Image 1 (spheres, rainbow, N blue to C red):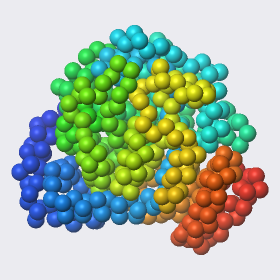
Image 2: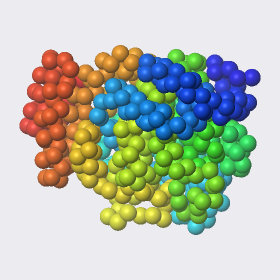
Image 3: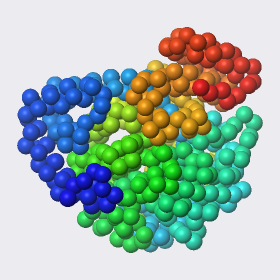
Image 4: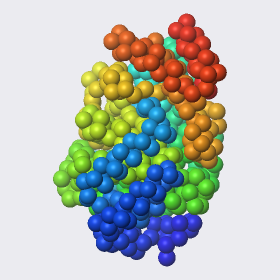
Length: 471
């Protein structure tokens, strides 16, 4: 029985409801009157249900698809402006006891060298990331209660926050680790994490069990209910995601939106972020072995419809995707991207990119400086801002600010000030030249005159060596 307020996975991600939704969408994909009415509702910027959004996904009418893309761009601009938040993943350990068939970290893979960073190695990785200019990290580790217990993760977070190198500082650590207990989520909250991120991989329970044949991750309900335990543990901001290519994309899309609806219904606040990874080649993993891969066209449409259906949610795209694909979906809804990423354990300390412990092949291998310059040349403001976390603007407080549009008076100046820090401390001469011109052009776009004047003063102080201003 489908019930978005239920705390049971099989009830808030109800298989029968998804099948009925897909049948309804297929039946009505050419019902242009219905499609137009859904698009009109979407213009109110209050989101769509999983069933309404599924009708739009099924519709292949070129004019309506163009209208979906245009609306996604409008919503993205209204809520996020032209800011793109920057982050990097930090892989702590590739020890794992699970048997996930799509991940090279699976326990039976004997070819991949197993590695776990010591706290000294964590510190060196952080210094390398700070020297690139990063301020926000997403830490990753395989599931292994012996090698990667919660105490190890907490020690790594403490180490990361403790490193002050030149003008560098990691100001926010997001955490992407396996589903755990309410008690452990409380510990992560006390450690000062930002968002807790956990990818569902697939919402199709039967496929999930086949893809996770062994290990604790085999428990579908425990994994799917993790966000509820995280919120019970006091974590305001959680991030969802599926690994597109494992199961039929229309099924995953409906399940993803149902999960977002469940969080809203049960906790009063939807997901802080939604990630859109696609399965990629990695050690002993061939993506062609999974026959549900999606084209770039479908991927772009998924991004646009997530933005329309969940308008206030941040959308993340990683270096799994190429420069060309990232450039295509940025205007359709993406608000966060990684840059200069290395997906191997200890990879940032190495002069040459190591590949023997990578979780997946990195498609976009440009440096952070190159990614920042590229974004600015496209008219975006690369933002290294972490102010909302540090000012307590999380959960429903962030969402209410976002929905009212007041976030613009925080996010726009914070983006400019953190970009100025990057330009002063880390940018190449050409990147700095482009960035200074962008700052001059964007400063007048801050809505409130008082905020604009304070921001201008802070930008001058950053030029003089002061750091870490925020609204």
